[in-house]
Length: 147
Image 1 (cartoon, rainbow, N blue to C red):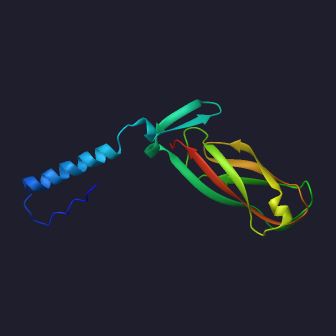
Image 2 (cartoon, one colour):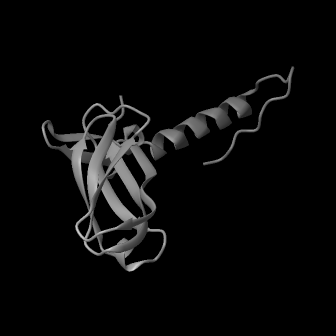
Image 3 (cartoon, one colour):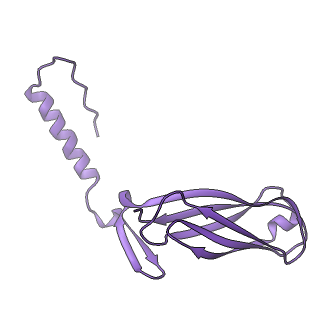
């Protein structure tokens, strides 16, 4: 899509400039058409499948710390929460993955379970399957329809 040259103060608006504006609007309209491949579906637990344009969806990438420079025993758990900072209409689809910040055996042997996914945040638990020093964080991706 071409950029329109900005008119100078006092410049008369002529036919060629209006033609360029109309062409730019038509190009933009083509790019944001309602093709089916420009939609996203989010299948919610309580509200079923919700669909919307990709441009109307919200994707949040977040990070939170679960355990920082701690020593854990085998079977220890740690609670975590994360606030999205925005409100969704329905609880979004959320994916969480652990990040081993210290490169330790205990940090590599952890799994995460989400207890709750709400329209404003998540909470869950991390369980450590190996004893040792850990420094673990969580990468978070949430996809949903914003309010």
